[in-house]
Image (cartoon, rainbow, N blue to C red):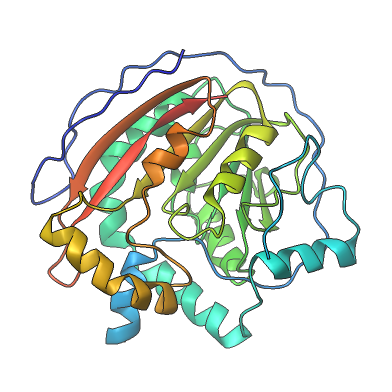
Length: 305
């Protein structure tokens, strides 16, 4: 039975806990399942934190619904490359490197403000997940939440190959064994991992920028084991009729151009609600950031496969 928990936005100088999430925990198998390693792929845009990129930059034909088999893992190298190129065209190396370096330096203040939520969510994985997939791993800001658990294997997906060195540095900094982190150059709409091979999936500030949100969520469901968890924190559109929604709408085209496809007005919570998860906890909060940023509503929570 689908369970929704909706909380009101709370104006604050920082992101404050609004309530303790009410969980309906389901156990998941911890047995390791061999995963398919993807062939070499073209470079693509990175996956989010993209609201902040608009500040840093100014100051310093789709696939069908996911079939039973993977959209990506059963394809040969040339076919997989073509698939990724259709979902998102390649970017120049200089752009990918610039974007990765900006993401590595510009997100620290945001991560400090969102940490209370992440700690709460990632705590749900303890003892329940040994194989974790993160879509839009970026520079690896979430890797610290796996520190101290040498049994966890993290498969980090990102279409920007330049993110890998930063993500690996983050893994090293938090003491993660080198063999426990696997960087995979891929998009969320075509995950090169086997069906029912992952205990938990994570997406933080990524669904705002994928080309096909529904396809990405179906891929998450496909690779998750029955009862597996999907943790998410995403910035979303403000309420209709508000001044914030007006400014989001005005700035959205520019944001998509300079921030690798990030949408300010995407209603991600509705996509997650309609994705077909067996159980869902969906919460809302507001983040007041520095004056150059938008005051962005967020959705966060847990879904069970």
